[in-house]
Image (cartoon, rainbow, N blue to C red; front, side, top):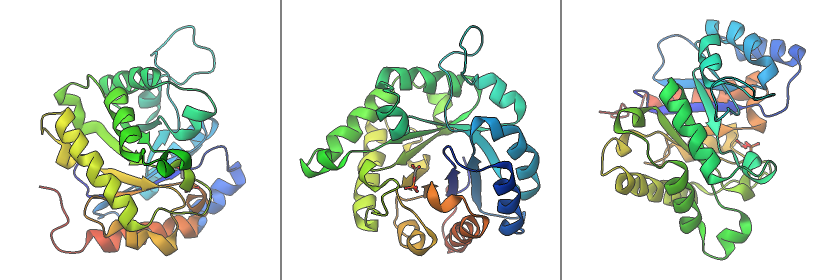
Length: 262
Ligand code: PGA
């Protein structure tokens, strides 16, 4: 991955076709020569619509979830190869809503991650602690365990397709963002953890996104932190004008001197 900053919209189970039309009308032209990436993850039923529309905006499209199998008798699942075949480039894996509501285990998340990477998708691997875990001082141990288990056995040649999103569960959809300092502290910890796990290879290049009530009003303060390379955004990615404002902040940040990765 060469871009230094990422704005990724996770539309969750929102947006009707009409809303998608309005989104792109309000988004306007983001320009082609950009030093940041803008990505969107719609509901599965809207992947094709998005793939048709987003290309003109130079926006990559991916899924919110993926199967741990590539084909066959798995009713209701999304195959990594089929996603790629349709033009999708990435998938979210291990979002806290999948972990808590759908009881996805670290082992299952790891199988999906390995298969998606092998097939050629970029994986946005999500991790983060609950409020109770934070209050008990367990943030680092929870995040470390999710990373050790979820990102284990990734061959060195596939690591460049890993993006990690730190999303404290208590900040998702609650309006309570982690402060830039709180987020940076965990991001630095994740960077160090990846360096240990991968013996130093490529960990400095893994984009680390922050997620949890990111909006145009707080994104700049987050992106200015040394280990925050972008944002995974739910609610504030649904409207074209808001997504545009997030992209403009990434654009501004990416133009500061010395921001391209070596
Ligand atoms: P939020 O969601 O921005 O609405 O808090 C973020 C996410 O769940 O990815």
